[in-house]
Image 1 (spheres, rainbow, N blue to C red):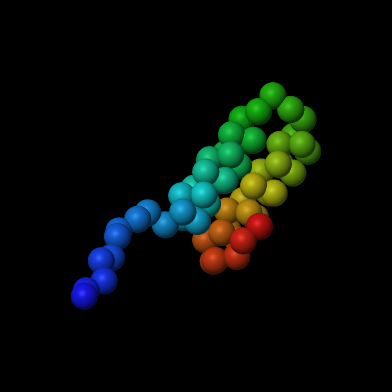
Image 2 (tube, helix red, strand yellow):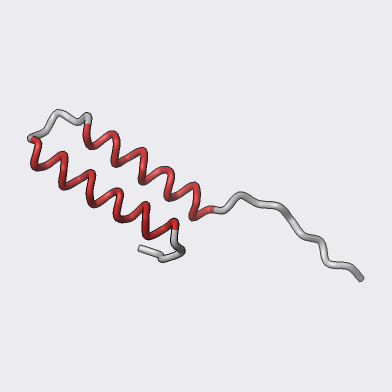
Length: 56
């Protein structure tokens, strides 16, 4: 019996893209510069971690 391979999207890749979008949205938010920069950096750190295979 042969195994069937199902093609699926890489969930961590799409999750990283969502965090990247969240990071850019943080830059456009109506907040102080310090808050926007902190939120951007936090979201980009999570996106980078997901891209290299880490889970956060």
